Amino acid sequence: MRMSSQDPLIDVNQIESEIAARVQRKNCKKEDIDVLRPVPEYAASRPKEQSLGLAVVIRFFKKVIRGILLFLSAIKFDFNRRRHRLEINQLLPAFNYGDAIGNAAINIQKVLRQAGIKSTIYAEYIHPKMTFRAKPSCLCPKKKPIIYHMAIGSKLSNQIPRFQSLKIMNYHNITPSRFFEDYNEMTAQLCKEGQEQLKFLSDKIDLAVADSDYNRKELDDLGYVNTFASPIILHFEDYEQPCEPSLLDRLRANGQVTNLLFVGRIAPNKKQEDIIKVFYYYKKYINPDSCLYLVGSYKGMETYYRSLLDMIAKLDLKDVFFTGHVSFRELLSYYRAADLFLCMSEHEGFCIPLVEAMYFNIPIIAYDSSAVSETLGNAGLLVQDKDYPAIAELIDITLNSELIRRRLKQNSADRIKDLSTENAEKSFLSAIQSILQ
Image (cartoon, rainbow, N blue to C red; front, side):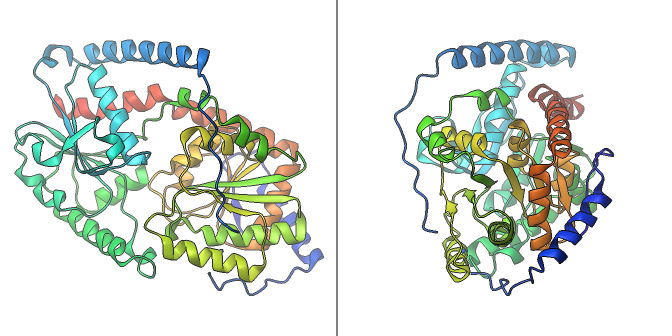
């Protein structure tokens, strides 16, 4: 198996040699588990809300301070002289509750408002829990600048040329349709339409802000002339909130059990089947006292979810838990109980869960695809091949090597500084300022 690390102190060649020796010594033949088809759904109970106390006060003052700094930054950018007339609205095909793109829109709105710019979120579909944050897309002013969030096909894309002021795109990447063709024809079709609409808009967008250089390169290749890479804005102080204590206690009930974690919607491009196959070898040949938690909703991907359950049953594999959609506090519990984060995804435009795992100092092993290596930096170990027994051995080596864990912890802290809220906000404002000058 080939692997890589951007940390020169982690000897990749030595690790690869040790993995090869281990696999050969155990003579664990690659069993026929490529048949895709994944323990009963895990339903975590939801304890009553706990008082947030001091944590809320600290978060409040951090946000106030950041707002002041952003306002001063706006003055430096000469936004102050236009703030009474400048308005930049956001337009989304769907504004969902707990959705990464919806959260990105909320954070962008905060940044714009703190910089003295009026901003309203408009969406074609608005989740019932989000109606207080957004207005119907049909009400979006045509003569005001807009930020259009592009991630899937939508009839809104065809309406963008009708807007008469600055047209800004926030590109989150579109998953290739081939991943969904066997599981959800509608999603596959929307992805195809999204790719066509992305080409259609190439000469109609004044500024395209991409979540990563990987996304930006795609835009450049399509002929977009004014592109900018700026990471997704995350508010890390939110991760200091109290988690669900009873859930955390259950996850940590037996300190001898190793908890492997992946966070992300249950979807074919995320490749949960490959995570399960790695876990099969890890549990059978290396550590029987282990659990795998796959945190994420499978709404719209029920066929894929059932195929994973079927595969798990055929493998007679225990201790794989699907959580479905979880609350933010439950999510914090899973992160705080995790021993290692395993990502086998084959398409990511950024991958927020990688950043979240870094924040919680969880060792990360990830398949080197799309924007994964860019987001991860040197904060994890990358594998170039999906050799399941070898990756299982790499998990064991990582968890039992003090040097590797120490280096990944330090690298994660450094990478989080690079992706800090302040840096991401400044980067985004810089992109906006470049088009307003």
